[in-house]
Length: 317
Ligand SMILES: C[S@@+](CC[C@H](N)C(=O)[O-])C[C@H]1O[C@@H](n2cnc3c(N)ncnc32)[C@H](O)[C@@H]1O
Image 1: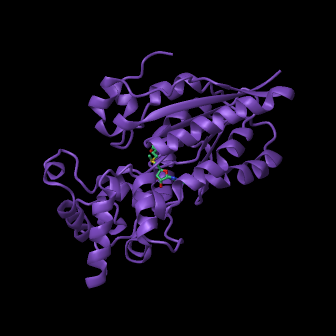
Image 2: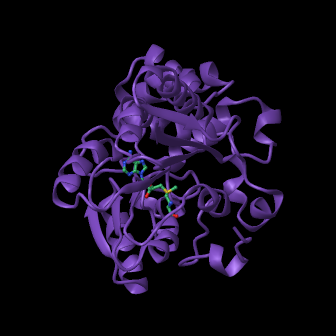
């Protein structure tokens, strides 16, 4: 495939991560179904929509209702392709696709993409509480129908549980100092705002960490977001079932931005290739090592720098 031009990579002032590498693995025809488990602003989806027009389908999921509405607008602006939008987690993909296949048996499920994590739009909206740059409530829920918030975790969870999430989801070296400060502060008054928490973290870490380029609250905020949305549990529970939804020659691509996510995907893919050796269905991992963005892409879109792409294909013998 030819190299994509920069204009092709930029949709709605948003650059879909590793689009070039993904499109080299997805071989889509005009009747195919492209499933996007993490629609976001429909950057990837709008590119693949053009490949499956006029008879293909886009089935898109986002657990954030606002984002799903935006994706819908963006996609409808570009093409009149068949679409199905689902306001739910991608863990719902197997159920949705079982129902879809009964109604549309002639449209093969050829490509599924999971581009994990959050969108920049989430970060710049202070009301979501995801950024330590803006003052807002400690919310962090991606799906506003859920109950657990970051405020609840910070003020109610035990010292041991706070340690665990900071280490497991944030790889935070200074977790002991940060948790000690949280426990001490919340005895005085509840911690309810992003800036209050960010300032407390800054004060808790050693002076040389405060001078670093990366804000000392970065890892704690990431860990809280992952815990609030149970992101790793979601992923580990459904990744194998999602792969099994593919039709023969179908491909699943997953982009992760955190070592915990990447580990889950790597193991799930390994299990799939080990397991199916005695049936006519098998899986082939197409990325022995995860692919990473080129230096050119990182320059164009610095936020892509931590991305890792793994791809698996379903085969029949
Ligand atoms: C990195 S963005 C995707 C960007 C998208 N590929 C694009 O090019 O516009 C991730 C999106 O997936 C959504 N998301 C993350 N985890 C999800 C899950 N488990 N189920 C459904 N949506 C999820 C987030 O709300 C966010 O909108």
